[in-house]
Image (tube, rainbow, N blue to C red):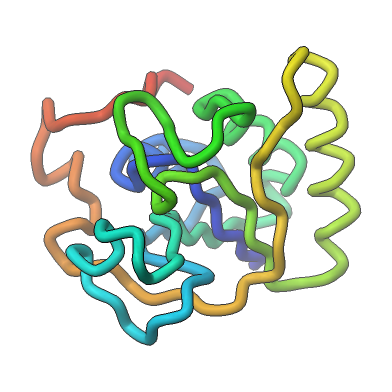
Length: 158
């Protein structure tokens, strides 16, 4: 199994989209790469902790490659906008790819380079090692499953 952590604005939609992909075996939402330990949602929303809202993804590499998974990710974000996705504005809504294994970096960079060809503006999606991940509160986990019709700016069609 492999793991990757993706930031694409509001984490509810990113999780709902990713968990629909064949080969994804686990998802959970949380906060990554900030400077406060175990932050709350309210703290993250203050833009004072440095965290991004993220979706942790565990996937079976025999069923889906990191490259294909990232192709799905690029479809649901606007990688040229900084600190905003859809109507959600703030540094916690930035886009990012946070990796735990250095060997994934080449695939991530190549994926970004392929996507850049589609845009006139520069891609601003962060690509960084995962420094810290904290689970979001339980009410955020699988939010759109628990709340069908809940807010989501992402087109959830695979």
